[in-house]
Image (cartoon, rainbow, N blue to C red; front, side, top):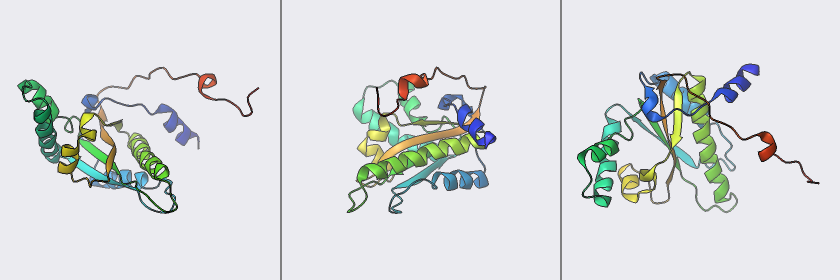
Length: 190
């Protein structure tokens, strides 16, 4: 138990640009996805799915991001366009967690969205447990319908997060965390 608690206490987000290869092996990728899929899922709806970006697929997805970026910013400088093309190529592996939450007779949509968030966090923790660094981000293209269509998302699907995974180039620094007294209360309050 102590090892699991220490793992949870030492997780840090690593900027995608600070992640390098090699990325996870095929067996490790299977472990990551297995862990990410073992989250609370009221009604067994599986209200999430994964899209894996590795190798040249990262730049192919970058082409979709660039197309949407150019429509928004037709006068963008070439270096800005290239930065957009590299969005999913900053780490050796990127996994998009796609929320498929929707109306259900018994299961509130909010619970389904939370399940996708739990899958995303479990993916981040599994990467840390395997010795990788990870970063859960969205950025503008996660909300752009043209990009989502190009990545194969259905009209009812949304990006819960893009999880960038790789080897930290340097040990991560911690950031200040809120004191527990500022974020935890007891009921009833006096």
